[in-house]
Length: 225
Image (cartoon, rainbow, N blue to C red; front, side):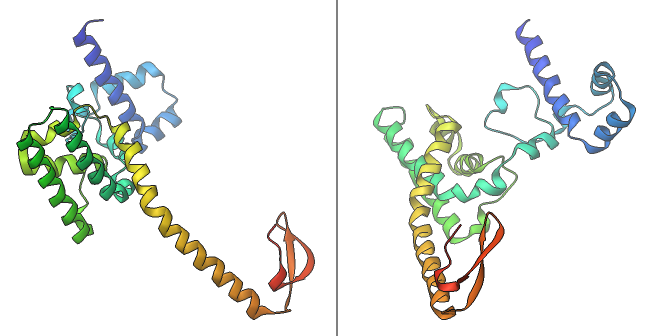
C-alpha cells in the first residue's frame, strides 16, 4: 500500500465512523438490514465527505481531511476537562523553562512563551468564561491562545511533549490542588453528621444492612453498614 493509498484508507475510515454516529442513517441501517458493502457505497457516493468539517486539532496535520464533525464532537473533552485549565498552563510554564534550559528555545522565545502563558492564566482566573470555545480539549485551547498571541513560536512549546504527558501532569497538579479542598469539605461533613447525631439523642431509627432494614438503633450510635 502506497503512502497515498494509506491516507485515502484512513480518510475513508474516518468517514465510516462519522457515518455510524448519524442517528437518521443508523436507524435506516437497523430497519433495512443493509450489508457492509451497501453501507460503504452510501458512504463513498452519497454522504458528505469529512472535509466538510472545519475543526482543527493538534493531530490534524497527519490527515489530508478534517474529521467528521459528529465524531469530533463525540470525542471532544473540553466541556469537562476545562477544569484542568490552571494546571495545564502551570505545566506548560514549567515545560517552557525546561526547553529553554535544554537549548531548544532561545532565551527570547522562552520569555515570549512564558509572558503569553502568564497572561492566559491571569485572564482565565479573572474571567472563567474566557476558557471556552470549539476546541477539542483544554490542551488545544491553551495552545490556540498561545499561538494567537505570539505566532509560530507558540507551537514550539509542544516539542518533546505529547498530550499523554500533558494529561498525566495536569491530573497530578489538579489532585495536589484539589485534595486539600476535599479534606476540608470532608471534615465539615463529619462534623455536621456528628452534630446531627448529638441533636437526635436517643431517638430510635431502623438500622440497615445490605439495603435491608435491621434492628432498631439510636440515631447517635447507628453504625455504618
